[in-house]
Structure formats: structure tokens, C-alpha cells
Length: 354
Ligand SMILES: *Cc1c(COP(=O)(O)O)cnc(C)c1O
Image 1: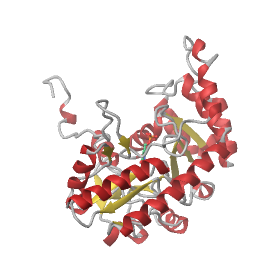
Image 2 (image 1 turned 90 degrees about the vertical axis):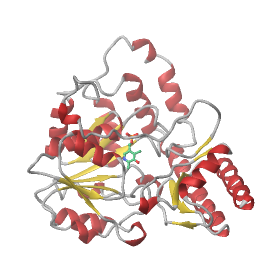
Image 3 (image 1 turned 135 degrees about the horizontal axis):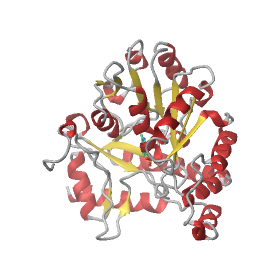
Image 4 (image 1 turned 180 degrees about the vertical axis):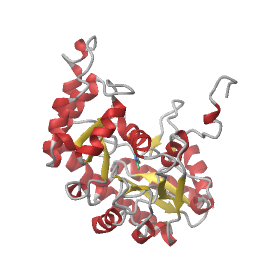
């Protein structure tokens, strides 16, 4: 930190994204990207005319995309907020709804960005312990008297809770915002979007990064009551009205026209997840039941950090954490069948080595 930086950031520890090494080709199973390219329509949409229009600002209201998202999720345009990745949405949500009188609560084991946003905005955060086996017990979130952020399915466990649990949390916290981060909902989870008409304190965050093969395009959206959406827009228009670039806007519109393609890809990922879990079980691994495009699994022979290191030497990237509760596990993104076979082959070789 230079002597010029504001002291209010002295305690801030930045989020550390999964590594994106450039040194060699890895079987890359560490950042929950899709192994599939964007749909042919998406590739066509960003290749032509729009590139030649980069001299012009994009539509700050994102009207065409907003109306497509609304149609796709059967909500009204005033229920839709769009931003530069769902990280951008979460940042705006923390900024908009939390302060020293309105703290935030989230699980102690969840998406690593939540505590970073809390600190960035000087918000006090209560981290609620998960139960045994990374189980989120809804009753731990009743009557909290604070805003709440829950990833459903949760990370890095992949565990999901039913919409009825979310509804109870909404019902018992009527004066606070409940953000449900559904980044991974398209891999078998149940979305709570249908509750936005009944609960004006619900904000559902989604992203094009995982199930729609657009992590590099940076597009997230939130669905919620018109009041919440207006609040988020106020902050977006006070920060950067053009936070979604022209190419990403047309790419996302084309992605919404390619629903069948992405649905099929999600189905393949779910099949590959089932296959990988079963193969790991035969090798003595214990895997947390996942409804996401990753699994959280523990090796019978070595710690998560050790397995991560051995896999990396062999050209396979996964993710691990050095926290006591997570030490036994690695998080493995579910990729193509070929990627999973390559991963499993290296795991078998590592176990044989002893
Ligand atoms: C990947 C992820 C995000 C961020 O997604 P982007 O849209 O790429 O910013 C948000 N929340 C969770 C739980 C995620 O895993």
C-alpha cells in the first residue's frame, strides 16, 4: 500500500481468483468455466458488424438484452438488472443495501468474494457456520435482522437447498434484502425466481459465465422487485453507465436465442458429474453431493493441497484451500468427458505412486 492510499482500505484483502496460467496447456478444472465454446450464433454475433461499431457507446439501458432476459425468465423488464458479471452485481448489492446499521450475514464457507465486498464497503459481516458435511440449515438464517447472501447451490461444496427453505428465510427477514446467488443453478438446482413477485426483499443473481459459456464476456444479471432494481441502477449510473460493452450485449442476446444448445451442454455436464463422482468413489474418494458444475471431493490418501500439487505437476489444474475445514478437499470443475478421463487417469496414477 502506498502512503497515498486511503486508510479505509488498510484491512482490505483482495479476492484471489483461480490461477489462469499461461506457461503451458493444462486440463483446466479450477475456475468452473464451461468446457464448451459459445454457441455458433454467439460467435457469429460478435464477428461482424458490431466490431465495426466499437466507436459508438453501447446502450446504457441495455434495452434489447433486458427485454430478452425478461421474456426468458417470464418477468417484466423492471425486474431485470444487468451488469459486468455477477461479481459486479454483488458489489452493487453490498453497496446499495448494507451499511453500519444494516449488516450482512452469509455462510462461513461460501463464495470467497462475499467477505471481500463486506470489507471493501466497511460493512460488518456475520459468518454463519455451516453444519456437518457443509449443510446449510435454513433455520440458522431466520430472523437475523440483517441482509443475507446465500449461494444456491453453494460453493465450494455444490450443495443446494430447496426453494421452500429460501422462502422461509425471506418470510422471516421481511425488512432486509436476501440475495440468492444462483451462479450454478442451471446444473440441476431449483431457481427461486418465481418468488420475486411475492417477496420484494428477494434479489436473485445469475451469470452467463458458467452455464452459458461466456466467462470471458462478463455478463451477470439480477432479478428482483422494481424497487431493488431501481436502487441498483442508481448506483450503476453513478459508477459506469457503460459497464456492459457492445460485443457482450450482442453475444448475450444471441446466447438467449440458443437455449437448446446450452441446455444440452448442461445435461452433458450433469452426466459427466455423475460419471466422475462414481469413478472417484471406486478409488475411495468421498464427494459432497453436488448440483453445480463442480464437485468437492476428498482423497483417501492425501490432503487437498497435496493432491492439488501432484495434479498440477501432471498438467491438471484443480482448486484447493488452506482453511482447516476445507483442507481435505479439492474442488474439481466438471468439464468434457475427455477432460474428466484425463483427470481420473492422473488421479489413478497418483494413488498408485503412493
Ligand atoms: C462464478 C461465480 C460468480 C461470479 O460470476 P461472474 O458472473 O463471472 O462474475 C458469482 N457467484 C458465485 C457463487 C460464483 O461461483
